[in-house]
Amino acid sequence: MNKFNGIIEKKNDQYNSLMIDGEWYKPNITWDNQSGEAVPDVDFSPFTTGQHVECNYKENKSPDGRVFKNITFIKEFDGQAPTNSGASPSKVSNITRETSSDSTDRVSQQRKDIYVTGIVGRSMGSGHFSVDEIDQLTRNAVKAFSDHLK
Image (tube, rainbow, N blue to C red; front, top):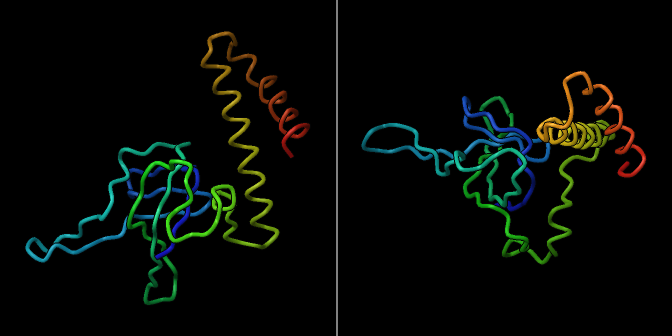
């Protein structure tokens, strides 16, 4: 069983899946022998985009060799390292799943996109800015990210 924690970046209710730290996850499925139906082991409905969660997952392989990661347990992250892990919470939250430069660039771009979207969204939600000011807000957010967070 693998354990990790991360931020929910996207949620797809249609396919019952979550994107956490750049990877898609689906709930693990158990077959109900009486009804013959597939029943998810976990319910993603209480979780929202931007929420920090702690998960257990297992890897499954399809007949064609693709690897799927299915979540067997999920809860809101409480700031504590998962059990059976000697890592501190800061080490756990900095897990890197891929090492290629493409994934590093993608993660960096995702961080920037999330930051800019958050700044512009909160600014627009405040009611102090008009639609005409979105371009300037976006430019300012990109500059702030580049100056202080890159």
